[in-house]
Amino acid sequence: MTSTVTTAVADLEADIAEATVLSAREQEELIRQHMPLVGHLVREMLTRIPNHIHRDDLTSAGLHALVTAARGWDPERGIPFHRFASTRIRGAILDELRSLDWATRSVRTKARATDTTRQHLTGTLGRTPTAEELAQALGTTTSDLKRTDTDVQRATVLSLQGFTTSTGDDLVTEKNPGPEDMLLRREQIGYLHHSIAALPERLRVVITEYFLNERPMADIAADLGVTESRISQLRAEALSLLKDGMNTHLDPELAPVPDNPESIVARRRATYYSNIAGHTSLRSRLSLTNVIGHTRAGLGVPV
Image 1 (cartoon, rainbow, N blue to C red):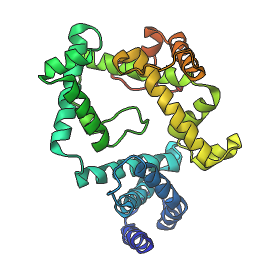
Image 2 (tube, helix red, strand yellow; image 1 turned 90 degrees about the vertical axis):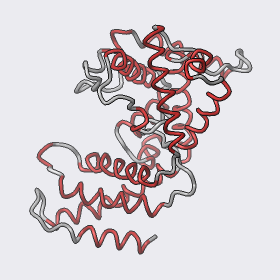
Image 3 (cartoon, rainbow, N blue to C red; image 1 turned 90 degrees about the horizontal axis):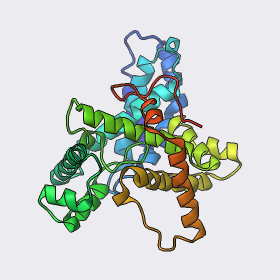
Image 4 (cartoon, rainbow, N blue to C red; image 1 turned 45 degrees about the vertical axis):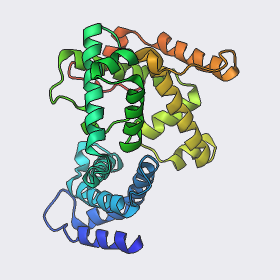
C-alpha cells in the first residue's frame, strides 16, 4: 500500500511542470497537506461497495485527482481547496469504480428499465405506481421486481447522500428530462431538504456537517463531544429516518410498516414523518430549486 501511494504521488508530482495559478512548491504543499483527505474519501466509499474492490485502485485514482485539483485551483474564486478537491476526488473514485465494471450489464439494464417505467407511470397516473402496477407494466411479477431491486442494491454504488440505489449514470434515463421528470426531481430535492430540517437536532447536525459541509467524522465528534463510532451510528440512524420519511411521502409502497405501532420507536418515527409534513408544501419544495433543478444560490437546509 505504502509503495503504491508513494509511486503514484511521485509520478503525479512529476507532471506539475506547466505554469498554473500556484507555483509548483505551493501545489506540492497542498497535495501533501490534503493526502489524508483522499484516505478519508476512499474509506467512506469502501463501506458502500463489494469487498473485492481494492483500496489501492481507489487511492491511486484519488491521488491523481488531488494533484489535478492542486494544479487547477484558483484561490481568487473563493472556494476552499478541500471542497474543490473533494468533488474531484469523489468523481475520480466513481470513474475508477465504473471502469472496473463490477455491476453486470443485465443489472444496469434492469435498473434503467425499472426507473424509466416508474417515471412514465407516475406521469400517466398522477401518482407513484404500486408494485403490482409497475410489475405489470414491466411484464414481470412483484417477486421478480423485488429480486431485481435487491440485485441493484447489491451491485451499484450508493450516491453521496445515500438516498438512492443507483449510480449517477443509471439514474439518467434521458439526457434532457421532460417537464414531468424535472418537476418530480425538484419535488424530491425539496422533500430531502425538508426531511433533513425535520430531523432531531443532533441527527440534523451530523447529516448537515458530514454531507453538506463535508467535514470529517473526527471533527464532528469533537464538536459534539462523542466518539467517531458514535457519529457513525448517528449518521446511519439519520439516513434510515430520512429514507423512510421520504418514502412515506413520496413512495408509500416502500414505507416500512412497524410491527408494533404503539412502541416508543414507532411513535417517534411517526412523529418525525408528521413533522416533515409540517415543514413542507409544494411551494416551499419548488422554491428550493430553479426551473432546471439546480439548488438556488444561498439556500441551505431550512430550519
